[in-house]
Image 1 (cartoon, helix red, strand yellow):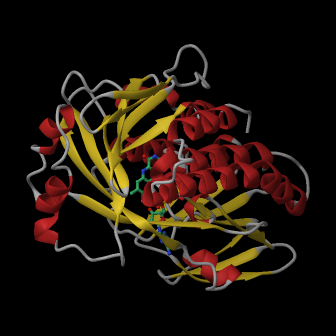
Image 2 (tube, helix red, strand yellow):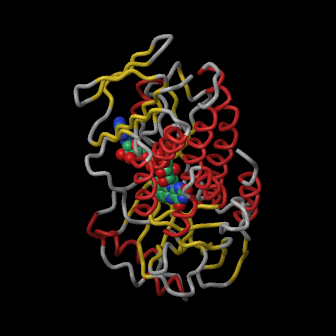
Image 3 (cartoon, protein in one colour):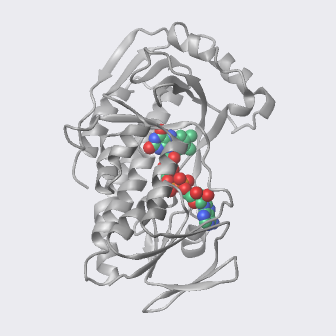
Length: 373
Ligand SMILES: Cc1cc2nc3c(=O)[nH]c(=O)nc-3n(C[C@H](O)[C@H](O)[C@H](O)COP(=O)(O)OP(=O)(O)OC[C@H]3O[C@@H](n4cnc5c(N)ncnc54)[C@H](O)[C@@H]3O)c2cc1C
């Protein structure tokens, strides 16, 4: 039986896994490299399968209360003309919304507080220096000079995972997709009560997402040829200029983008590790194994689902090999579908393909995500 687990990385996937494992009665140590356990201030879009996974962790009500619940997504032009409306699928049952906008800090607070309340032993400002494995355990040494022995080590250290490099080699690196994402928190107008995505911008799209009663955020996804470094003090100007063609609601929201220090810009990267994501007693989860672009709004959901599935499997009295193989059977194709579908949306935006069908792919994705995990 798996009795003691180390999780490396205290982000969305690591914390969800800690909650699931603690609920299964497993001892959990978690090390997080940041000394200050903070996340940046903008938000995420999540759908019914995220809410269903949060329900499995026992924290869906808190998530919905701290976010902005809504139903479906609206596609429109940058001038506000409707293009398509996709209803969400109530995957978490009739008492929950189909979609949720959420500030990252609000999600982090719920996950970190729950993991700590359930008895996860968290050390901040600490990471691993070496992982040695034998038939019966993995011994890990840490940067604080300590060491520990574990039945399983979980690498949940994100897209630039050091656990991945240490165990699987440096050849698995995320690739820049050719686009970048710009985000800025805004005061939510009453009319912004559902996710709005605007098509018709060259090389990408823009949109706005409600995050709470008072706040929302504006997003812009665009081609970034050569992956440039944008000057920090010009980010707000560049963001506004790139939304110059918008009229209506997007133009009003654009004018709120004034402080460069509050603009969050990220080049988009993706990586799908080939199966299996485990070697011996070390397993990769979340972005370390399957980092996706945000086009389908599914990265967080996939990381939380990894934790939920592990929580179910590790309660069983089977060999670790059998359990990890079953984990791969339940997770690989689903995560692959998301990474590839998300990349497809980005390519359509970059190449203005006549076959492009973002609403169609979004509908298909929701159908796949509604399947049990
Ligand atoms: C621009 C952008 C927008 C996105 N928008 C959405 C969205 O709208 N909806 C959605 O569902 N998803 C979205 N995502 C994806 C989502 O953020 C990720 O899929 C999710 O955070 C993955 O969780 P994770 O725990 O695997 O990684 P992370 O959340 O990145 O957590 C990794 C953690 O590990 C820590 N760490 C790193 N290295 C080490 C180390 N060596 N030792 C110890 N700790 C370490 C980090 O500090 C961090 O706390 C977006 C991603 C990007 C880049």
